[in-house]
Image (cartoon, rainbow, N blue to C red; front, side, top):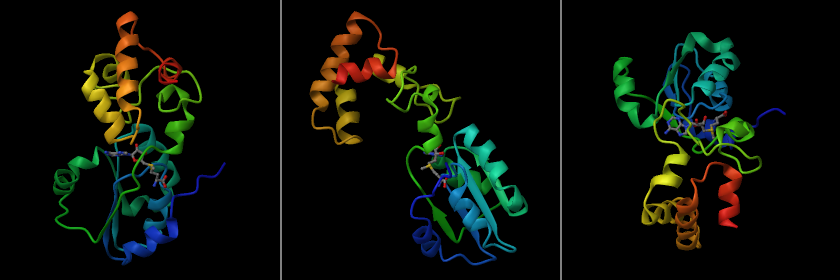
Length: 185
Ligand SMILES: C[S@@+](CC[C@H](N)C(=O)[O-])C[C@H]1O[C@@H](n2cnc3c(N)ncnc32)[C@H](O)[C@@H]1O
């Protein structure tokens, strides 16, 4: 199925793209937004970030037609400023963030983002990152788990779920997505 980038028209209008401008797509994914930006550039440049190596590789293929005006950077966008400096870029004309996980990350069960299939608790966008969901679920304090579930997930049962996770992992480590789903249920 063809991937439809989120709010594509609104994003492109909002960026007010100048053909000579420098733009950043901080969440490249498979390059849906980047393709629209790059196709509007002439002498301009698009610098596109993703921390997921697979995204960089596949977007690179999808964007081959505009490769002369795109720089792909595998990095976390929290390092944006330093990465731009390394490229000799002192300012940009527009930045896009399309935050969250991508549909390919959800579709590939082995990444551990989805609870539609049983898979190891991974959830790393950057496969070189040290911390996986397994480490968090099995190692972090109850209060930290509660805070993640409530703060990021707006989960009203966060205290109960955190307590259930801690109870279960005392019996045995929680290994897979569906084990975690069962505990939450
Ligand atoms: C919603 S998808 C973007 C989809 C993209 N706009 C498209 O049209 O295909 C979000 C992407 O941002 C990446 N991402 C999320 N947080 C990131 C971060 N802190 N640094 C770099 N990339 C990140 C993910 O790996 C994912 O590929």
